[in-house]
Amino acid sequence: MLDLNFTTEFFIRWAMETGCASFIAVAFAMLFQVPVKYLGFVALGGAVTRCLRTFLFLGCGLEVVVSTFIACSVTSLLFIYIAPKLKVTRVIFTVASIISLIPGMDAYQCLIATARIIEDTQTELVQEAYLIMHHGMRCFGIMLGISLGIAVPPLFFYRYRFGKS
Image (cartoon, rainbow, N blue to C red; front, side):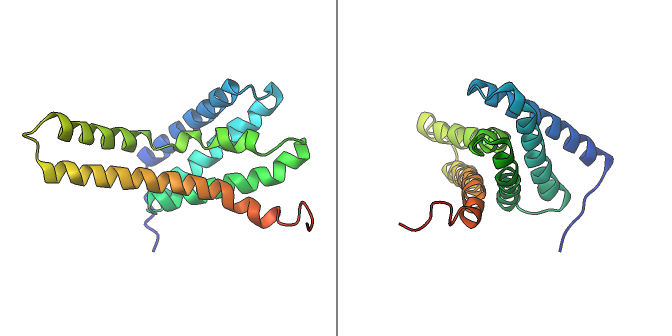
């Protein structure tokens, strides 16, 4: 059952994350010299991806990995439709659009817990091992959701693109 949590605080966070994600997507696309005429589509993709993940994760109460997979799948489907109309590959749009979903904080906390175990002999080993497993597995799950969300939808649409060998 969905747990809908729509408060003013939720909508403010949702709008801020969406705006920041579109900015991040455009900045990342500019690093890889995406033509200027496509940056608007990249911004739209970044905003849609982050907006949908935030809505599913915080608004509907789905797990972050499932929310990430659905958001990346929708973005991939969106650009499977748009990219051929613009006569470019969809990778130009999808890679930059998902960059704001990378689990940097979970990876950082996992590495910090690992460093605490290595450096300090007085640490609570069980607590640190729990933090490593929790954040490491969450980071792995999010990255798997991103990978599958980008890679699986084209399999349904590009099956017969090259013909039979």
